Image (tube, rainbow over all chains, first blue to last red; front, side, top):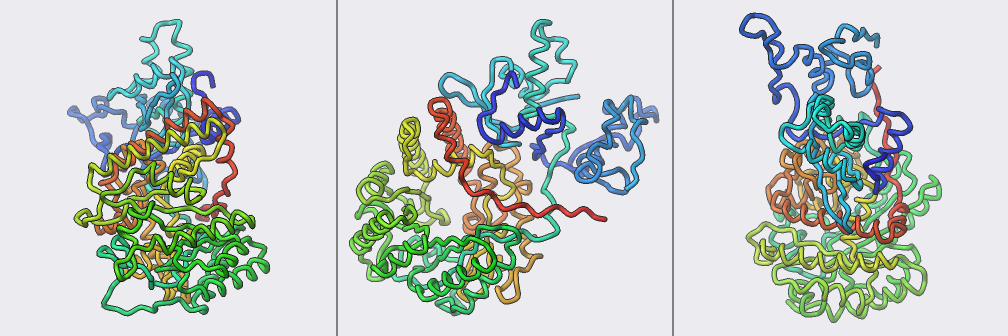
Amino acid sequence: MNHLRPINRKAAALAQARLDQPGAARVLMLVDTPYGCSTVFAPGWEVDSSGGTYGLCQPIERDLYDCYHSCYWPAQVPDSLTNFPSWTKTCGSPVQDWSQVDLVFP
Amino acid sequence: MIYRAAIHRTFEAGGQTFAYSAASGAVVALDETSQTVLKRCATPDGVDHPRWLDWAPEEARHTQREAFEELVGMGLVRSEFEPALTADPLPESAFPLQTLVLNVTNKCNLSCSYCYEFGQDRLSDSTRARAPRMSDETARASLDMLFERSGRSRDLTVTFFGGETLLNLDTIRASVDYSERRGRETGKRVSFALTTNATLLDEATIAFLVEHRFGVNISIDGAQSDHDRHRTFKSGKGSYAVVLPRIRALLAAMRGRGGRPVGARVTLTRGMADLAETYRHLHDEVGFESVGFAPVTSSSEREFALPAEEMDRLLRGFTALAEEYVAAAIEDRQHGFSNLHDLLGELHRGVSKAHPCGAALGLVGVSTEGQISPCHRFVESDAHVMGDVKTGIDEKLRAEFLRAGHVAQKIPCHSCFARPHCAGGCYHEAHVRYGDAGSPNLHACDWIRAWTALGLECYARIWLANPGYLDRFEERPKLAVRPSLETPA
């Protein structure tokens, strides 16, 4: 770390995890607002005024992440918490790469 | 993708800037670049990564990106799509028990006006007579439960509580014998603790406490005039003159024969004395190793409750004692202000709590009749009873209690930087104040934030001047091994 100096034990552990496996240390945290599909307005299951999806304020592919990350609907998408944490690894930018996301076989 | 600063607190010490992450509990020192980037992320719009770098001066782009990535890794900045942990699902298998608090009696030879056990705020249901003393048989059944439910935990603690604990010394002795025997059979180490008002400490009792290495906490409110205001016998006579020689005898015996350090526990009420003076009396004059202060638990209308201006005075008192602690730590000496010592230990380890305390997790309380409660403060009340030592812990009730008490359920906590340490505060206090153990203790929020901020500053100052001092927080016993999360087949 060049800009942050770990002071306590937790900070040192996070810094070390980052060295051991870059990208693997992900700080899971409580969001600052209640989360979940009933409390977040996530457009996408609907269409824009022209009947298409281009005019929506967020890409429809975001829906994939809404289920995968925050809600975990096991029937629709693999769960990111326990079983398939790297399912979207091949999908850096959902808008462009969503088709690279593969099937999983539990 | 939009990134924003997660809840955190930045603070200064010794001319340096530090940050404490509410997400991870990490404490880091920031350089100028990371301060700039963090400030930028802390605006309502956040930054659109990586596009925001296009606007950065070209020569600064690389270092700003690097600082940004480090901030993300430390949990200080997060993407708006960051997988959000709401309440962790509780593990399928029950938590192993580590600590059992046995309420060996609900009788007391004092009648302190502020007592939550017997005072105006008592939880106990007076319409039903309860067994005044725990039988040896109930204690043994409780201890069996502790051993059977302790999983892989090797170090177990049995704490005796009351009432006045020592009114039932027979059951305490029987429990110690039994625990030590079972400890030998199972290869587990058992340590003992008790809280007492010190009125019954005689020579034989003291010898017993020293021999079995009891951790003893004594309830004492300071010098005689303060102590005798609330800690009285039923006649109204103060108890100070009775307890002082007994406390001195205990301290001398513990010190002379290699016992454990003895702590004083001071209950703070309206009109309390100056904290530094109280500390000086108990630590320097009486000879306690450590002194901890706790504001009285009560509904706000009681005459002894601490009003807002007294809470400010309390914070000033804590600040003065914290100064002394830091000065001692810099000289590598141990100071006995245990509230700060405990807070620094949590900050050092980077504790980030899902629940405010171990109640119903690794710890349960048992009433004189063998009812199981989340902790000793709930025993003798029917609120949140979760089983009986004969039939075992009712896992459904335990899970319900824990689910309701999870910090994710406490919406005001979501935007608070003191969350990792506080997690909403004491269940029992919330139960008394709001009639709901799962409620955050909103009356204490400003105070807890100021206290946590003070702790962070002290922590950073000690780290700057004598980092070696902080090693002593490494030696705390480790938490129990977590039961593995079972994944569905």
